[in-house]
Image (tube, rainbow, N blue to C red):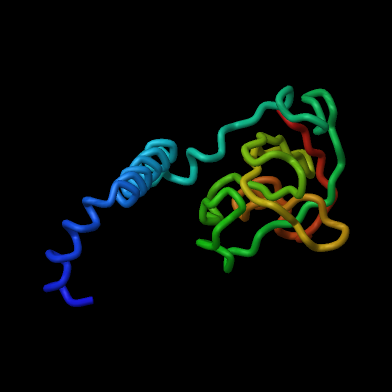
Length: 156
């Protein structure tokens, strides 16, 4: 439609009460969505609030230590989005687990060392593995040499 026809059609459309009501309804709906969403783009970190052990239903409680097979993310995955919409950053202390809520804080111990991580992704999806650690977390506890190993995991 040419721009020269718009001045001729617009007054007729505005006279149509149904059109005006629909247009105003659309504007109100768009405004409501904008306000409900927070109005601006939020950083993904804010989407993953820490979850304490007592808040995690069906997960181990703070006194419950579970043995899991751990592996770690390759640094080649840096920048790829995680389930929490955060990009994977090898230098952060994060983990992937299939069922723990995003934001769950864990203590992972291996070989006499321990590290605290936050679940921000889903996985691992390799048979026989229960948890993936970020590169920094794996290095902190010495998991990079074996690649995979049984670790002790506590929700705190």
